[in-house]
Image 1 (cartoon, rainbow, N blue to C red):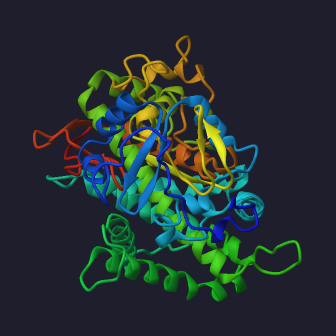
Image 2: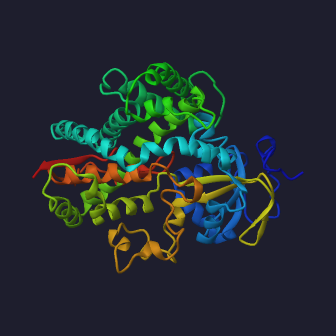
Image 3: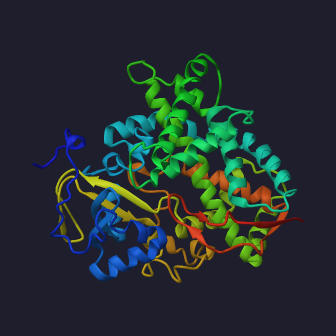
Length: 451
């Protein structure tokens, strides 16, 4: 029976895909281990052997891998409301972040997104910049004293401090920083668990413990924030009311805040880590960007400066092209549909290989090279197809924090490169992790020198 928009959440996922070309790989685990070892190579082998629509299996998932900008445009714009993000992620992100904005569909998603939009408008963003700048300065002073500095854990902690200040209104993270960091780390590990059961000492159990900690952390603060006059995002959410004049539920607020805090620091950690890797390798490129930020002749950016930093903008987007924070997007069909000439049954998991898509030679010249000039005129390669770049998603689910992430990254580049020169440490291994979040595998050891 074909699911309707009313009952698709209650129908089991379809696994009868014999009519789709391809191979599901090893029993139970499919392409999981191959994907962990070589993400793009695994996708490449599948596509070259079976085509841009083919069978694909990960542990716990059996679905269809799809490739191509036209197919991605069709899925992400979703004009027929046929692709459920909630059900696509139900057994992955949904195990820990169920109810987050990304995991809502259609009218429910639009309604919840409206609650959050005020926090990302211009006036709010201007205020965030005032809070961010001194936190960057404090972190830099600590980093320059560290003879064995590794960028990934350093920037991750710095961005968590910033997110906690701006989104949650926590000005002193000494007591909570380690617990929050541990909770997010345990959830990331839990998502990688092969067995999704809370066995003692297992990764999944650790992840669920982290989830429970985060939920309790926010639940304990809601009434206090609702009665106060705080300007942070969390306080704003607690006081927001729906069209009936009622507060949003505590559960909705908790779900949005846990995912927002995760996305605000982990995804930008990934992006900035890759930028610093490439700038550490290429001193000439580093100097080009330094010249751009230094030309402003100010220690801290003003909001109006953000749109003038063309090279910084390109550096961020090029890092996201090569190393998107989400390597593999997931949706589940609601009704039978056609993708790439194949009939896809209702309730079928569909995988979008974002990282591989961003390296398609028909869309990007010399696609494996970090080259910020591809974003600049006259090349402007991102304009070859409106869905050639999906580093921030697309359609209704396009990242609500996109402008915040760009602002955060540009502020970092401006303040850091105005003061320091950075080179890769001889200890650097030049190896990258791709899942659950892409990052340099060695934590990115760097040598920082004051200018």
